[in-house]
Image (tube, rainbow, N blue to C red; front, side):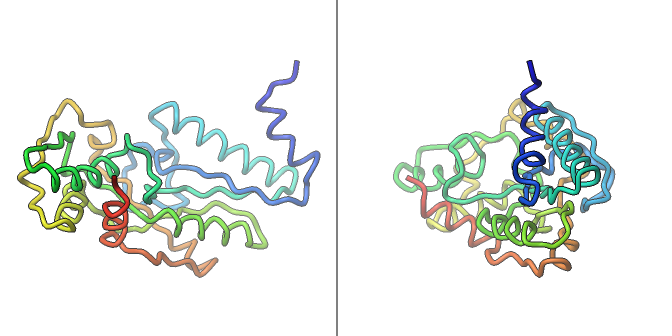
Length: 219
């Protein structure tokens, strides 16, 4: 019986060798890097199963690109948000909390770390980057990021300020909820200079506008 993963990798080579592939990687591929910002030369050091699979797939793209000449590019995506973000993500939780607290001032939101630093961008801008990468004559790997660090507290301040509230009155921190990413002394901040130089890509939506879009879309 054929290995399903091997069959999947062979599909393009056998049936669409002139096709173009974009693979969505993740900043988590860098794990806990030694330096910030990170770029395409930063070593991969995955620290969870999700990141391990992303690194393996990125290596597979490079292999098929070099060995078989496939147009296979990898985008190393940093956090990208929109009104479609799922409810379990901290950005959606904050956006929804802002609307809920506006209706009921007694509500509070418990978060792990308000000081955790994140590189947030707007998902439609990142899709534009993907399209530009696929359109390039030569396949390659690219960091897709805003390059601008913000804390979870920054996100909360903009979200609650957008509905006329003081966010500090409605949040509680619980250290037991702090994730591994928050423990890293070096934040995951991306350097997208290569992408900008090669494709002309620029983000169109800044951090404050992104947060307001998510709050306006929250139920």
